[in-house]
Length: 154
Image (cartoon, rainbow, N blue to C red; front, side, top):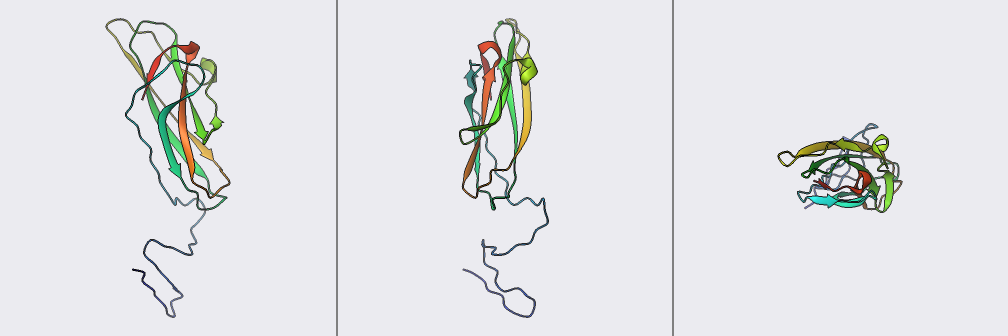
């Protein structure tokens, strides 16, 4: 049920869950959205593929900035050499941050394992986007591997 406040204080209307006018300083955070997944994805391509990590947000204004922060773990369990993975940020189907084609282009190197060892590496990153829309927008993380080797990403 809406509550209306009127009077000399200058407050004309306050409604539950509905702020009609707001004057926040530049840089204020209006929304926080979190996406998670606990599914392991075996990535075997140097072409980026979805790893199932995404979040959807609706910008308040066309001038809104969206900060995407992500973290992904990679696991090697066999003895094949030259393992590594890279991550890319996509807005819808548009790539904002490309995964690389070699170690110098953003791959996190992971050494080969032996029968008694597993190697796990974690990669994190961020990207500040200016989507120029007030429509619902989905951001996704894609992964690729160095030399099309297999890495489990989560």
